[in-house]
Length: 417
Image (cartoon, rainbow, N blue to C red; front, side):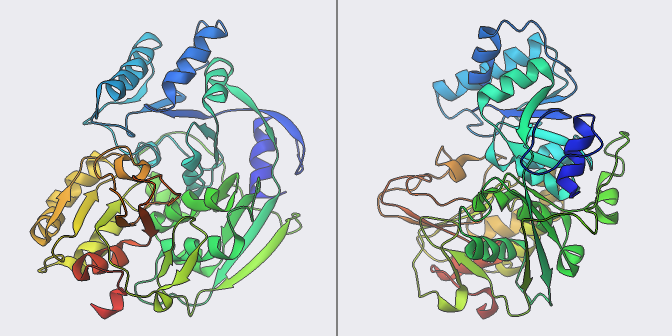
């Protein structure tokens, strides 16, 4: 079996499963946010549920429209807060003690290898970086899972992607996954598990692995997953006392496809509007003026991302009329940035610092684009109208490309600065 098949077998009490089977499986965690929980609360009440299956296996995170941008947003958080109080939800993350869900959840020790996790957010597949099978669901599925502690799944086939070669300077996990999505297309892995492996994956930091698994959904995948190794064990040290099983795919496991990608000549990548798959190497990108640069999000909001970005900006000022928005993914990361002096670097360069929020990534607040404006974001999606006005355009990139471009005022190869 593959890693994913082994996890499903373990969670539905069977010795084995195979791709295409329909199974009921027990859940280790059900995650929701201020945007998705209110509808789930309504459904939970409609079906007559009187209690949650386990108040320790539910995580509720304030992150999308927080701090509340308007009365409606305040109402969404209020509904989630009241649900958390009523059912004594142990993993409730309030503003000021929260972060973007796909960073705060693993950082809080709520994910271990071998887990089966659902979240009412499509980028829940991020947790696959720790060797868990994690996938996004709708609010109705989340509501029934709160009540039952299980859900039904079609066991997905697995596409294995093996990365080999040598990474060049300024090339990161973001460039690897953008390149991969460009090769696969937005439906190239539809309802599949993407299993990432190879010497390159072994060398990458967990921050880069989180980024890669986060964007598996942009190729249509059900999940992204990486076999847990010592880096994962080190990450979990002190975060959890849970016992877990780390799975790896069998030598004779059946894969839908096996794709090898040599990254030796890979350049920084840019995803053009309006799809994450519309990717070009930066050497083929003409001089495109940018109005706003965003560094952060669940995709690139970790310390490694900000250290790399700040190194380029240190002692410099961004271009006139460019807006630079920096968004730490959690309060702990915000605090660490302060201790390391990174906030000084970004502010002196002309950037503004936001509290942890999904804000501009979803076009909700903290940096909505106006008519015909161009954004360069380290986020994961650039669909038409997602980030602001329908005529606005968003290009996706890594943190170092974002910093270099903020300095120049147009999309810039970081090797040039």
